[in-house]
Image (tube, rainbow, N blue to C red; front, side, top):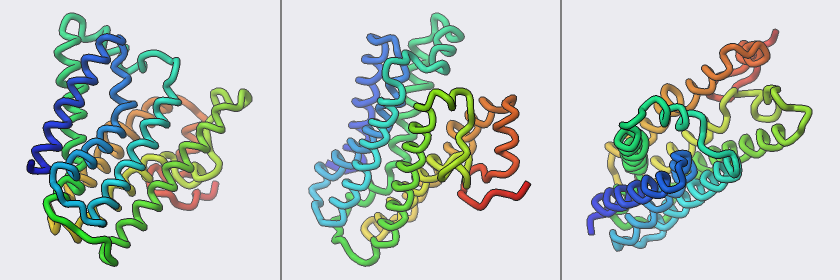
Length: 255
């Protein structure tokens, strides 16, 4: 089967299954937990149905799987026992009798659409069989930097929040000293790395839409803007924001 068609079918079935499960649990937040695993599925499904099991293809699937599994586990541990996220709970009230329809299209199918677009580098690479070569090394290095940064920043934030004395305080140490959203920057970097590593196999310039999309979403839609708005009335955060880069890690401004 064409790896693109296989990816699209997988995403549709995966998202529909998540939607049904979410309604049974009355918790649309599970779509956030399942986000990373969706990419893992796309990588493995497109690889399997393509029949192209070159070393390069396998490495790309592994990079995607490692990133996706870690992210889903992290979000699961963070949300465990907390019930439905406040955003979804608010929509549940606001949408009233149209909640099911709007949830299906505006939450689940929309995320499925973006999942498919973002994963284009690996789906398109599976059209061809590729060997692991020097041309893939820059992408693997970029992915590694992004993965390490995202993992470290998430762990530092979890450790910070576990300390009772930090309740209500803002994380400003570790990698968070150099960026207000280092985890999001690391995530974007991972997908730029996957694109660069996949390019020698796919040769497709179109697949650059994937990393552009995830970067745009993180910086302008669902990542940075939501948290910046959440803390807009927090004096400590506003002072932190004046000296710290919003996305790309950089040295703090002197006060």
